[in-house]
Image 1 (cartoon, rainbow, N blue to C red):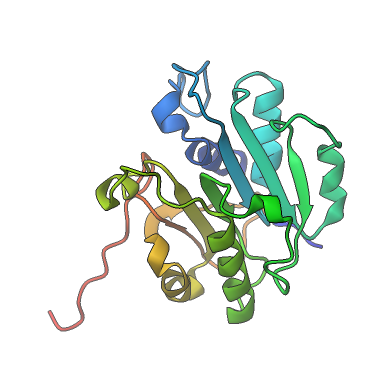
Image 2: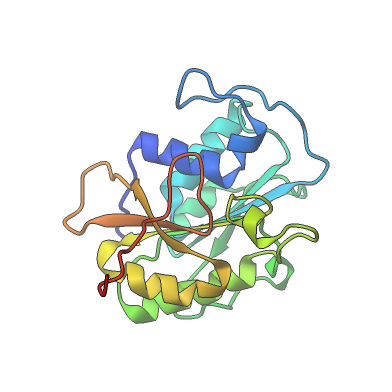
Length: 221
């Protein structure tokens, strides 16, 4: 039940990436948002798995009118105290809370399967069991690649996005679990408010405005 909160610049950056804001928003000054350039015809469904500080930041921006109405966020979280942020509503754009336990990765509402355009996951533990359970959940939640969007577009963050924030020492394991989604370690730093003893990494299915994939040199070269 202990939460490790990202610092505000990290929260803002991840919120922007998950909402495709680098395509749809102008930012001025850096780190802040303005009104979107265009209102897309379809909603953008955002899943945040075990990363409540980003969810809180997204809701704050949405209340201020910075995040537009077509962004539909859902928090998947073990700590049910966060459900207070998501009162019951018939509006599909309202924030939604889903109780989540990585030990039961598919114990989820059936209407959420294959629904999400972008997914952020920060598994609560570095164990292989926790990482594997979270990966099963992410794959279940994630939309299929949109029709007409090829691998090169996906690598640029077009269509759908997966972002994994976790300990550096399990980055190789995460890459294997998300190989089909194209998730790879990036050079971007994840910063927590009070710091952590374990170095944290960001892994992503695409190269975005903020990060590039880490190139691992071949040991034989």
